[in-house]
Length: 293
Ligand code: 5RP
Image 1: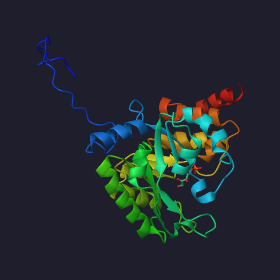
Image 2 (image 1 turned 90 degrees about the horizontal axis):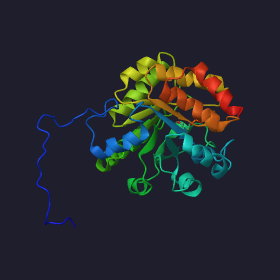
Image 3 (image 1 turned 180 degrees about the vertical axis):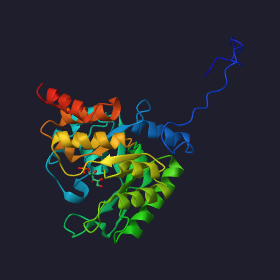
Image 4 (image 1 turned 90 degrees about the vertical axis):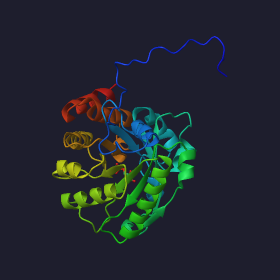
């Protein structure tokens, strides 16, 4: 307890310095609460404004895929090089040590497994907010199927998750999932990203496409791009570079990092593009140098 006797009298009120009232750095999020901004500042680096999210949530619908057979062996060493882990609570609790002290974006929907013809049939909320907070999540991810059979269910899940998110100060990442029957066009991504933001998502994950700058411009909150299927490293770096040039605030990349022959080198190279303004060519040279060490 503070000592009540012998305290110095307060005297310096800095009358010539107006109190700082800085606008929040992330697009469209200035009117959110302190707790949400604090969590967003763990997701997005306040200096670059960008993020490298490492997605390894694939098992929740695919079971184990190449590179994720043993997450304790393959993912744990990569954690230090990403800003955020995007994964399920099962993967995090079983394979990632709690001493990991960067951000976590918890996959919070359950979707249909790969045994189903088309995943866009619908989903549900898979993690309640109490458990997300218990895990110290900086965000939760909700997948939505705009235009798919499961559109209504998944948007309802998003709305309820955003309600809980605003109640507790936890940002929601809206993920635009594309079912088999759905075309990956600019028109589609313009529609889907905007809908997720309007329904309350604090940031949106989508796929890179033609005229991506228009998708970014029409989405009032930050966009991060998904990696998608494994590409040669040079091409994946070009995709990341082009997305950043168009205004994306980062990547949420999985297979293009953990299925690389040199996952740590690839994660570091992606971070050079995302945070340090490297061109794709420079980043690929960096990747080769790191891989050959
Ligand atoms: C799909 C997802 C994925 O589960 C995952 O995060 C994708 O990662 P990548 O495509 O980069 O391997 O969010 O919408």
